[in-house]
Amino acid sequence: MANTNSAKKRIQIAERNRLENKNYKSTVRTLMKRCFVACGIFEKEPGDESKADLQKTFNLAFSKIDKAVKKRCFA
Image (cartoon, rainbow, N blue to C red):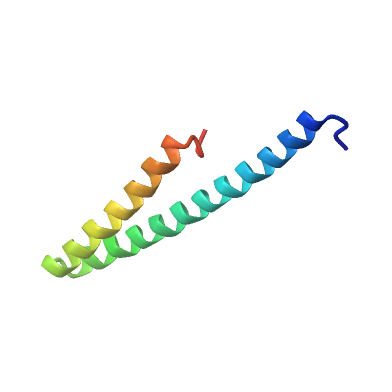
């Protein structure tokens, strides 16, 4: 167990960062799975509606990835 106040604080910060990283990783995995499903649908039935859905899922995934990289969650 930590003896100094600064060590206790570092433990709290590390736990907070771990939970934030876990959240980003989980969200990115989910969004990537949605992208793969949308790609499969577009491959089977190419059309404007499936293309728009694919583009929307790509935008969401890339947005979340960019935010995670900006916060250094994937270091």
